[in-house]
Length: 87
Image (cartoon, rainbow, N blue to C red):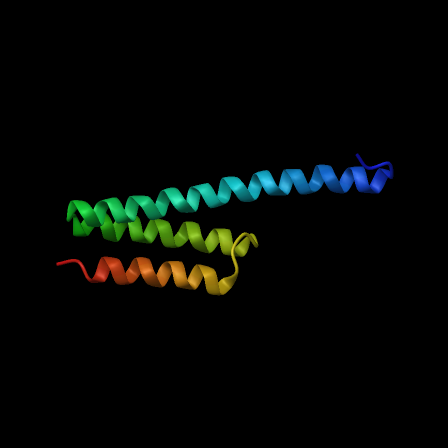
């Protein structure tokens, strides 16, 4: 354990940020799973709606600094491609 007051505070702050980031990443994973489950079910309209929701979730995570811009672009691109390739 740290002895310096500022180091103790940094530990608390970094733990709080890690918890926040974990929650945001979990939300992104959930929204991505909804898109893929709609694709597997063959429901194009539900997949399109889930894609809009997932894109918004990923963009919010990027704006908060959880994901790098290129990572979020890659995720959105792959989701969009999967939805567009539905029969």
